Amino acid sequence: MFQGLAEKLQETFKKLRGKGKLTEADLNTALREVRFALLEADVSLPVVKEFIKRVRERSLGVEVLES
Image 1: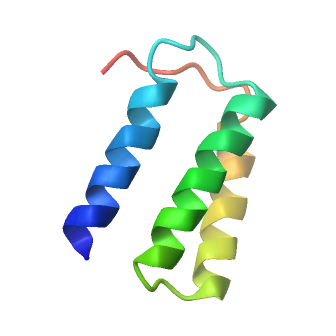
Image 2: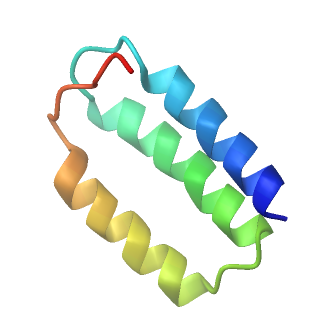
């Protein structure tokens, strides 16, 4: 279960590398993938919603690190 979650999260973050700054479209796509990965790993829906909300608030316009 955790291996699958880790792999999906790594794939999502790999897609974001080299983007410069996150756009709302980039963020929406990445958060959708993260949401699905967390739900598939049996994380409760309220926890997933709160996590996604917090990440969205902190991420818009942030520069993406290369590593």
